[in-house]
Image (cartoon, rainbow, N blue to C red; front, side):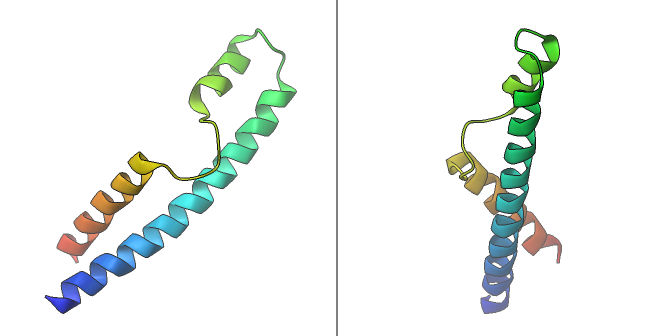
Length: 76
């Protein structure tokens, strides 16, 4: 039981770090692309649609990471 709990904690921490880095990189690259595109175009609208405001993880991100960690724990 302790081994399963340890695996979950490990997967949760690794998943949180990886997803946080991904989200920061995705946000910064997308913001640069938004500023380079002309306002009013479809490409500018699409970039604004898929980019959330902020670089921090929110509650839904933590839930997604927890579900991923549980699945990895059950499979390994």
